[in-house]
Structure formats: C-alpha cells, structure tokens
Length: 239
Image (tube, rainbow, N blue to C red):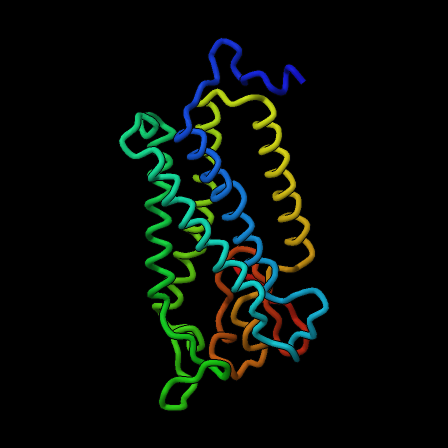
C-alpha cells in the first residue's frame, strides 16, 4: 500500500494544487476514457450483435454514443483548459502536446459541423431525390471521412501521450500509473478482439446495406481494416 501511494519518482514530491488536480482529473476522463470509448463505439458498433443486418439498417446507437462521447470530450477539455489558463502548467512538453490535442479537437468539431448532407433513402433531399454528400460519396465527403478518421486517431493518441507527460510532470503516485495502464490495456485488447471478429463494418453499408445500386458501394471503403460485404456475401476490405 505504501508503494502504491508513493510518487512515481521518489526523488520528487507529488504536490499539486486544486486547479492542477482537477485539470488532471477532467482531462484524463476526457482523453483517457471518453475519447477512446467514442472511437471504439464508432468503429465496432455500427452493426450491433443480434441485429438482423442487412434487413435492419441505420442503427443509431453507435452514432449517439460517438456524438455524446465527443461532446463530453469537448466540454471537459474546455473546463480542463480553463482550470490552468495563466499557470505554468502549459510550459514544457506536456503543455505543447496538450495544446496540439486541443487544436486537433477544434479541427474535428469544424469538420463535423461541415461534413455535408446525408441523403439516401433514410434522409432524402428537400426535392425528394436521394442526393447527398454521404449517399453519393462526393469528394467533400471522402475528404471528410479520411480527415476525420486520421485526425481522430491522432488526437486520441496525442491525448494519451499528454496524460502520460502530465503524470510525470505531477509525479503522480504509482496507483494512478497502474490504473491508467490497466485501463488502456483493456481498451487495446478489446480493440484487437473486435477487429479480429470483423466488427469494423463500413459506415455506408451499415446505413444503406450492400446493394450495388447505392453509389457508395461501388468504391473501396475508407479506412484501414474496414469490412464491407458485396451482394452474395463476398468480403471487401479497406486499405
């Protein structure tokens, strides 16, 4: 017990004030817990276990989980930033990485707002047509999906890096390091298992099914390890 409560570096004290301690708590919750969970929900739960896909399409559980999780990340990040504005916490590598994470967060929010129209049978245009950026997989939508996925994973990894740097800077006790390491290991193992089970279903097909008449089904899915099905059951994977 004494070892668990002792600071990671015995040569330094673990002394943080109210603002720093709460900054650490809310940022760890945001980037160590909510952000990776929101990514896992979006990647692996577009088609739920027991869902009769493709008869049952456009399950919204993943979208609500991802959206609400990321809103929580934004709100907690704003709070975490407000707690340390004007302090010396932003100095050094931890601060620089943290501000880079917040910059990526702003870009992600802007991309999400301007991701384009949906279209398709579930959200037709005002003129009654099926036209939409997502349904037609326009160049804008393709750019959005690549950018959103690449920057999203980069933000989560940088966020985790900022947490580790923050733990070191605050000389956090050993139990904090062990708890976070165990949590991230559980997330990683879950990610690998879900990926190997083929749960990373293409967003387009999760919404509209594998019918080749849908324009988005005529192109390679976007992202690494994304599973897509053609009519007849043949698998097609992303790059």
